[in-house]
Image (cartoon, rainbow, N blue to C red; front, side, top):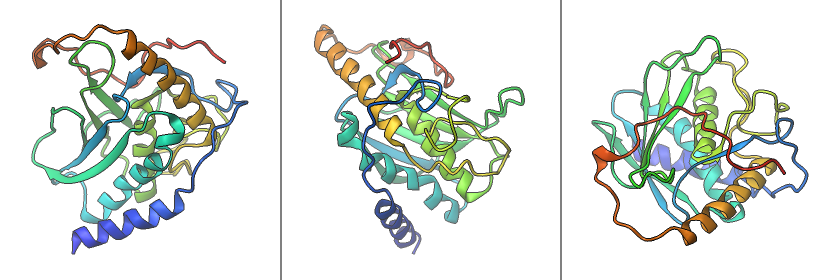
Length: 235
């Protein structure tokens, strides 16, 4: 019954996630988010899990809705990354191309952060091996859960926060008030354009990199918070 409900929710949101065309004139800090280099490997399929007991069955559909939105622009962004829900897990998973959504205390009163993306790069090259989306217990409204996951998925494509950006211009804007939706359920045209720039550079970077065996897990980088240094020049 629960799986049928989730499937129906994903179909509904996939239908709403019409293709978003990349825009050529997106000013960073106004309509577009700045970018960094924490990204999934191009053309990877990301296995998504929800930590058992952290969310209600009805909440899960809202958590998963942004997967369809980002999948809809996978080709347009040049990432060709796709997300696929695998079910619940008893513990956060640290496997290759795994993403776990869970609850955790991350609220930052000064910056109004209510969510966080934690990442791990086994090869120390900022290409993510696994990641986790942590949502503060203060965020409880269904629509804000969708907004939160859509935002954190943006971080996983190299987008940074843009608190100065116009409402509706990017999924990387912040919540103005706890539990009040920011109306951003998925990527905009400017988000697509920025992610395209990121993956053009990531693809070139990976082609130049020598092929080496990955280090063992405990020698990689520690999980980090959302904001990484800006390494790509503004358009």
